[in-house]
Image (cartoon, rainbow, N blue to C red; front, top):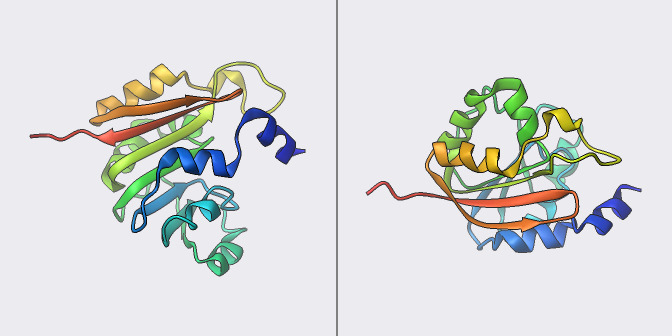
Length: 170
């Protein structure tokens, strides 16, 4: 069922990972990556992929695939440095749970890029309640507040996908 929904909405792992234009050698962290749905495809582009999640249920499987695992909450995690910080369907939760603290921690670990894939604030048959979904304008404003500029975006049926780059502070 979930695969059908992903296909219907353009939310395929290939579609999303290709949009990121990952270069070999990039270090990537997938915040809230759970089973590594996108991380496994990212691993085809670079050999330095980590999943950060509070739930370690899939960690053995991810480690076997060559993905590093970090059991932590981004509300408290600010270690490491990654070329790309990727979040799929979790940013709205982070804002609800710990607000600016999550944004500060993401800023600390993101060297170059941040990519946020999240639900549009519209009613759908699945996903989080509309009341906690964020508009893409809110997400853009949040990232601009930590000096990341929007490079490109992609509209999907139920999601928006935003790709940001750290601004030079010359």
